[in-house]
Image 1 (cartoon, rainbow, N blue to C red):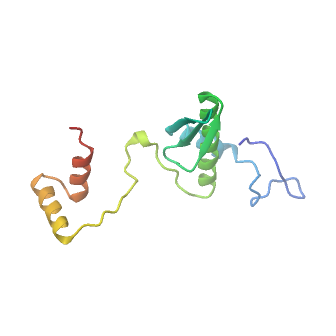
Image 2 (cartoon, one colour):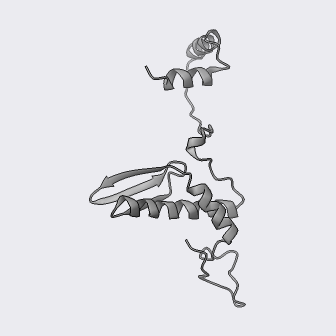
Length: 140
């Protein structure tokens, strides 16, 4: 996605509702800085490299070489973030910051919940979430 004008209205201006209009250069610059910090998940399949952003898993790229694939997905990430910024949305923080933004839902019986609450308290944890996270993510 470049800042070049692609479509314009009768007076030569890019239309706000035109999805092909260029991004504002300041937004594009901010989006690039944000997207450059995102992690990329890559794999090789059928002679082609594929990738998506860890923080934006629905933004994909591909290429014949790892470098081409990374370039492709970075461009997609930058466009996705620029669109989010234009729409007033907050792009996700880079995964490396450790900001907890993901949530899971686990159904328990009443007795299972009571057991977890008890173990959480006796283990000195603030709550069940901290206890489960520590128990599940601690390497043994």
